[in-house]
Image 1 (cartoon, one colour):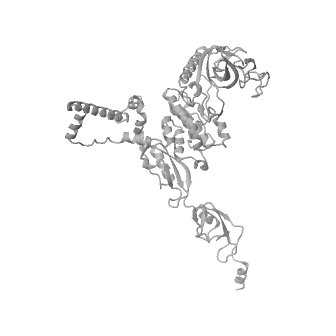
Image 2: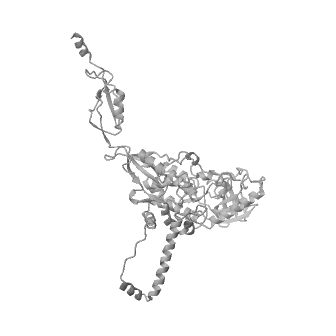
Image 3: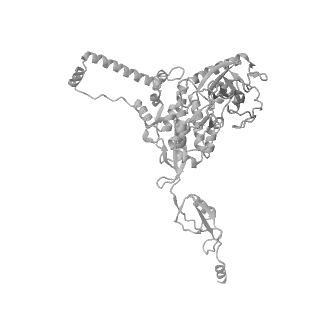
Length: 555
């Protein structure tokens, strides 16, 4: 066992009697930051406190050492710096506002006890001890060597492709879904709080009570620009599962593009996601749609649950099938003969009157389900709170009842992009996101070539973002006839074909084209095919040649 006196407070390894650790370079003589527990403080006669690792408006995180298990640990101390202080080297905390401090301390204990019960989730780092000491509260969790998602993406060349990050993100999504089902939220999902372990798995860290993750509370807020949802910037904003969906989707966006979305407050007036076309082409269309839906600034239009986000990221056809089944009218049972019915009832050993009673019961159940669906859809009114009572009373079937908010998928192919965008704004039931342009020999430039989701799927959730590809027209363009045009007119005609006009340094005499007007092309003739985006040189006339002018004068 390591002699605790020789334990490095920077890595929890034996520093072999040296002041500067030979393993990590940490200097034990450096002072601990203000208001932190002194190094080598022992908690619960078991945990040795090491260097400070992090802090926010809720408390301080330390590297620690479990002297019983003989392993490093992570220790979290409830220490809100604007509500409490610590005198000198004392471990005891002195609250500045006793009542508020106690309320938040109790919330800290409740929150982390709820998290500790989720220790079996694969993307959670287990908490295995929670206790009170020094007039405050502590949690102890497993210490894992890792790098942040931010550093991982930097090491990956600035961004990663979908196939690389999918196995990292999807298990975390599953854990978040289970967390929210248990009533636990995070509200600080960011590239700093998602970490990659040596095993290649991604874990979620950085848990804190809600008061730190929202503005205008008694604690100093810790929000993450680009990842925090807009409702977190507002006092008593409607925090929900969709708030964490926003943060998770922002991290997914960061991993795929190498940049974070703009801060939610800035996106309030311009919600567009600015992604270079070259990057968009590498992201599967269904993933682009999921990103756009999960990063809606307006919470009412945003993907509401992680299960819904999972379906969009997986492009799962089964979700659509289930929803369509709920929306579809019931099928009539096959007609059978009375003899067959009688034979069947006899074969089951039940008299006919029993089957009659069971049939009535079944019919009543079917009618009750239909009534619940009609009532939940608003057909017969809603409860005063505006909530769907059928959904709230049947939470376990919420995925099926999503069909109540479905709309038809419009067919946008062959529509002019500007017209389709205007129609979307007027309908307010879906949005359009242009994800790129592509050449097409059949669809006119500026018109939509393809879309996701496909109209063949028939139904989609209201507010869904439809990603579209817009035609650039044919790849090969026909050179227009510009002979006799002014240089400005010729340049406009060439530009309209998607080509780049350049005035040739070579000028020619022409007895028929006045000086300053265009003779034609330097290396082509009108009607030639040139690839889109190429440069063409335009030759301008110098007027009649000197010899022609002299002949005219002599005549």
